[in-house]
Amino acid sequence: MRSVLTVCIGNICRSPMAEGLLAAGLPGLRVFSAGTGALIGKPADAKAQALMKKRGLDISGHVAQQVSQLLCRQADLILVMDRDQRRHLESTYPFVRGKVFRIAEFDGHDVPDPYGKDEAAFEHALALIDAGTRAWIDRILKITKPEQQTT
Image 1 (tube, one colour):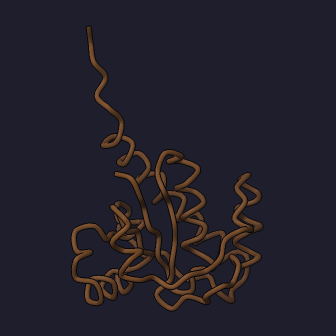
Image 2: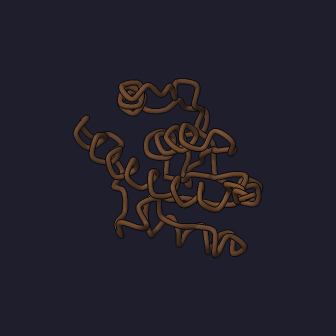
């Protein structure tokens, strides 16, 4: 495992927050994000930046980009926010099947889009993303850590 791509719609709210959390928890991996309908060139939403700053993570340098075949090929794992995004990626890029999962897959739910909503909606989305990223980080660390030799 070398790289993880997080995907939402606009690439300014959920996927940048997920990217920030995953990058902090997996410093040896390349973590990047994109959107299925990206607001290309836009920074992360101010509410998302503020919530992440409270956690000591700076996503102010984020710039939204459109998901592409190249980005999907570069990723070993693709984490989306909901079932519709998963279906969209799998139908647009069939080669991604088997490496696309919801970020909250293990909890069995989607992460609702907080775009244009109040801070409470962002906090709710971030709580779901945080729980999902923690589960993925644990799993990724288990498969990427070298086996310890006993001598």
